[in-house]
Image (cartoon, rainbow, N blue to C red):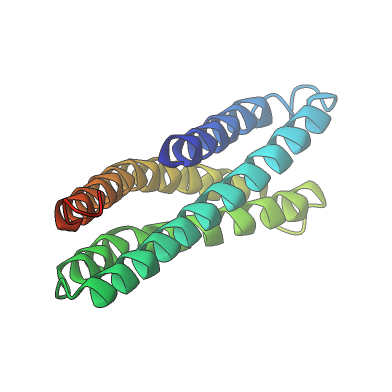
Length: 165
């Protein structure tokens, strides 16, 4: 699951980069506006999905770990580690989500000349850098989360009595 989520985030980030590149062609040839808009729509959709899905995946696995710990009397080591992992990535994901949506909206504002195109351009680069930073964090945290899931599964197997197994 983590690989699929990371692939979605990577696809969204790469399509954002492509949208930025095509955006530089728009002043020279207005025909590129359609491609720029469609790439922006694609990247916005993919990035909102990816960051939101990763958030919910981490929340769901954290709840499952907490319930498993409580049920088996393992203490709260897993809960503490999942809370720490989420605190390392959730602020970046939230900021990335806000920037992605704001940049898409400002693109329409720049098209209608309600705001200067340079503002949209600057926000696009900030959004891309934030998405790259967030992708790196997501990669690290989802890896840690997978190791935590494997550790819980191993501990669960170790606790199964030989007479039942």
